[in-house]
Image (cartoon, rainbow, N blue to C red; front, side):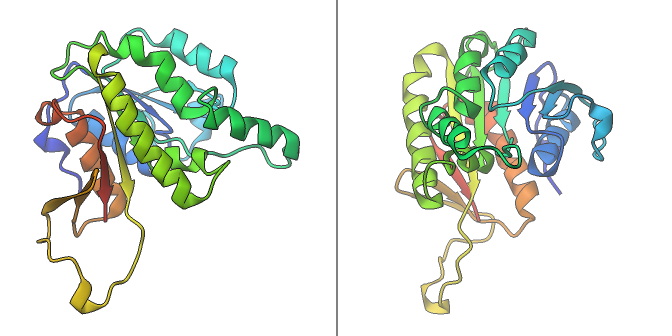
Length: 243
């Protein structure tokens, strides 16, 4: 279970890109349960085409592989306090190799995908009256877009790096940028297992590591709510790794 009851997001306008299913839907539901007005996006034209219950949200269709679709979504956003990027990369089946390579390079350069959408919304995020300013939360779905042009390990490193740089560069605008991802699934010998207590946290390099005995989707939702809350109003540029 998520701890959405611990937060009060009444009056907040939250946009969860990819909030129609899976991890994104869990995050969107948690924000809605905490009082926020939530809009979710998906790639289908109508919300009725989804199996998930989207009745608690507003719905908009967007294709992050098309600039005109992103521009249309940005034009529909009047006010925004929190942007959560949880839309995995699903390119059309049978897409020609050349076109896929073009999209991959455009995503890597920030001309398409989650990074482009974030850049287009940053001025609207900067107008948020929330304590700490507007907030961007990247999830592991962003890494999937970066994997179009690199290995999973390199994509994760790029996500951590771009999060840190955006957190520093956008601080002057009053916009916080953080990420929450799942830790790699590794099994360590007993004598080498981390000694951090269950539910505790520690700092490893530039990455915050949180250890929890909890369903990963719920833990990611909890982390997203925390990063968007007033309790994290001075946190920016960090990647919170859930394991």
